[in-house]
Image (cartoon, rainbow, N blue to C red; front, top):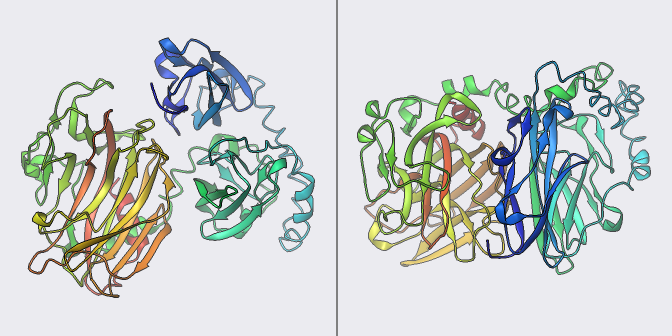
Length: 545
C-alpha cells in the first residue's frame, strides 16, 4: 500500500479474548508505505519477524505460553529506509485450566507485586502520600526515550482496560513512548498528574490511584514537540483499591484484568436509576437493535439510494456487493462483538456504493423535532472498526449528527464527530460545531482525540440550538466531559425544526470500505434544561445493551 509508513492490527481486535495458537488470518497486520519487515512481540517476548510482506504480514502466537489475563501485543514495522512505526493492542489470553501449570505465571510476581506488600503498611493511608513520591525518583530509569520523527505518543503501561491500584510511580508501571517529544503532561480524568520534561530517560507518570474512586477512569498523555504542537493518547483504566489494603497482594488481578473494564460501567447502579429517571414521554427517538425492524417506527434508513421506513427495513438488513471483509451488509444488525447474545446496528459503506442524497451514507434519520431554544440529549455507544490509515482529503462523520431542517441551505451539522485523512490518517476524531450568522456558516473543531478502534465508547451530548449566548453544547466520552461550550450553535432557519441522524456519512472521495457499529442510540428532550444528568443518559444506553 502506498503512503507514509504505518502499521495497524487487523486481527485480533484490541480487547478481544484469544486462546490456543494464532497464525495467518487470526493474527496479522496491514501496513502502508515501503515495508521491509514487521516484528511481533507479546509483552517483552519476541514472537516472529515477517520479512516477506508481499504475501501478507502475519504473526505466530502460541497463547498457551502466556498466563491468562491481559497482555500487550505489538507490531513494529520497519521501512526500506530504516524508519519504524508501531501499533500496540491489548489482548485477553484465556486458555483452559490445563495450560495454567505453565510456569509462565511465575513471571507475573516479578513486576514486583511482592515489594508492593511492603506498602501494605499503607493501611494508614496518610503516611503513604508523603513517603511515596520519594521512591519515585529511584524508579525512573527503565523506560525508553522518545524516538525522532513526527510527533506521536502512546501508552506502554498500563495497557488500555487494565485494572490498577495503589501507587503507580514513575517507572515501568506508568509510562509512554513516542516520537518527536520534548515534554509530556499526564492527566487522570480532569486531574493533572505530573509533567515529564526530562524525556531523555523516558516519559513516566505518577498516579496515586487511592485518590480516585473505584471504577473506570480516563488516563491521558499529552505530548508536545519543540514547536508547541501537541498530540494525545487516551486510555481507560479500571481503578480497584480494596477497603483494606492488605488483602490486595495482587495474585488474582491478572485473571481479573479484562473482565473488570467492561463490568465496571455496569455495576454503577446508574443503569436502573437512568431508566427510571428518563420519562418515556421525553424519548423522541430510540432505534432498538434487539427489536425486529417490523415492530419499529419513528425513523427511516438511508443507504444505497434507498430511504425505507424502519418497519420496512428487512431483518436481514440492506445489502450490496461483497466487500473485502466478505460481508454484503450496508445497513442492519449484527451480533455485538463483545456479547454474541445481543444485536447492534451496523453501518457500512464501500467507495463504489450508490450515493444517497448526494453522498455516501449509511444512516438512520429521526423526524425533525429539534427546536431552537429547547434542550435535548443524544446518547449512544460507538464501535469503529479499524479502517487503517486514511489518505489526505478523506472526510467523514460517524456516530451522530444534528442536521438543519432546511436541507436546501446546505448547512453542515450543528455538531458531529468528524474524522479526516492526511496528517492524522483518520486515526483520530474531533467534535465539530457549527452556527450560522446572516446566512453564512461558522465552524469550530475541538482538539483531536484518538479513535478507540474495535472498542465500545459511550458518548453523551447535551445541546440547545440558539444563535445567542444561550446556546449550549456539552459532550461526555465514557463518562468524562470533553466539551463544555456556551454560545451560538445551530441554524437561522425560522419555521424549520432540525433532526438527528445516527450512522456513518462520508462526503469525500475515499478508497476503502468503512464499518461503524452503534448500540442504544437515543434522542431525549429535557423540558426544564436540567431535568436529566449525563449519567442518566449513559445509564440508559448501558441498560439497553
